[in-house]
Length: 206
Image 1 (cartoon, rainbow, N blue to C red):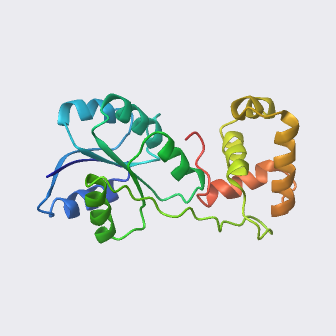
Image 2 (cartoon, helix red, strand yellow; image 1 turned 60 degrees about the horizontal axis):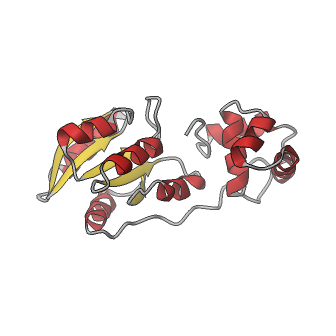
């Protein structure tokens, strides 16, 4: 039996997932949350064996950070992350903290159910990273490293702080930024960051 805790700040989706998944005979919904901040506390109280959690919620803690806390405190609890943002680094970062599976929100309910049971069976599923995102006038997609730098910029990091966070030099940061601007046709990083954020390719602060 799957004891499922669902975490998502979109009430419509949260209700839809709860209603649909509760109809499955082998799934019991033990609780639902709109923020990831207290997901680990809820695990202690509700004792789920699987947490289905959005990466981007309204609280101060991202789903990836919350998943890391859960896996460290309760390694036997499976964690399945979901997102509507096709950012290249999410899957890699989810794997790094020990997440068991990953699914995009535009998946069908049947795919959600399939992923849940596969996860519980120890067969973690991760979609192929979508590398097709182009920006501005450029056809060439940004690399994972370039997206990292763009995300840090969106989180108000200076170039020196970016270099320290990524353990590279400021000249390397400048090199990547110049490459991004050349690819996309933008004159400055702020304009590129605005498009990336508006299109959902970047979610700052994750």
